[in-house]
Length: 239
Length: 239
Image (cartoon, rainbow over all chains, first blue to last red):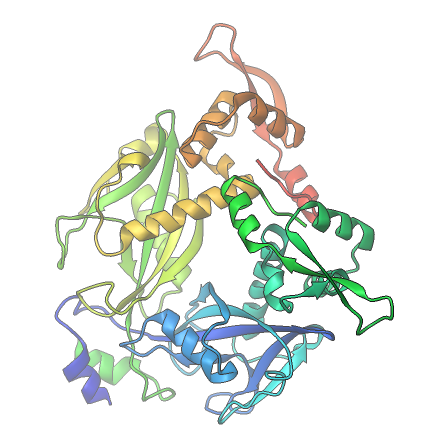
């Protein structure tokens, strides 16, 4: 391997520079009726084998970093289309005792349903954990999770990102619960309802969800087209 | 060099992984009475020697990535204390023809004054360019600049980041010009004045700046303490 690195892969330019290992780690948020969850895995290689970890992978020399993130997420979910965005790069010298590894963190949002609640990731023991009970993770992964949570909160406040976590058709109580889960706090139900309806971004579908009560709750869709248009006009979504 | 890499620096773990080169590039915004500017440099090494570029450096194996950014900025400005924040990591395979180099972009804001308008960066030809006239830069550096501008605009809108670019004491016309420069558009003067004064975040100093008119313009300071407190209470700054 070392021979390969020396002979084959280092090109002419920048010959006096020393390379480092590069990894991608994914903070995968899930949401269902029980609340906000985080997907964690039992690490199966040294150092720290057997401990809880985010899912990640080293970046291959011939792989775009974005593709590394998509590869990791595809391995977990089976889907190609999933919300994923670069979060932050973590690069302190001592963050990984195994070697100098700089890690680019990506965050992702998944609606939990029957298809993806029970995941089957080859070679990994995977688990959705309640966001309030995330255990000690390896390396700086808990810090990554905290940064991702801040980003999620910032986004949910000024962009309607939370809708990624709901079914296409949702009720106001579902949306309200999502926001309470993201902020891990008790919000004022009336105030929330007033603000979100006033935004003009919810389309009332004229259908009801009767799964939780006889009377039923109105179903809504998020109006992405209107959101795009308003954003262009300088509108600031705020909850 | 290759011998050193093989013998000395690769530790036991992750032995089958291939390292890549890691760089930091800095998007340095400046602001003065003429408007918003960008600091660019003539690249003095191959490939693309002699072309305009952002200022950057390779990350050393024993250097935190944040420290690389500070080292680069210190080289330019001589200052240790300067606003700098990680922006985004650029990592497509083909972005640098010299080798596989992943670059972590940082953005920075500098108030231009007599001390730093004429920079003396050893070995570099440095130039502040009008933001509307940024030339073709090497590699994906123009894309980095665009991402940084979006971030600056987002920040200036929801956080009072723009104040980093003004003197401690400033007039409302100065603040107004800054926002016009950031958004590269004509804003409504009255509306802006009303919004910013209503925010309660400006401290009127009871002093006047008489450099531009006999009557003079009121000088203000930004109230960072009040901003911190309001932010904790859930206040959203918005211009």
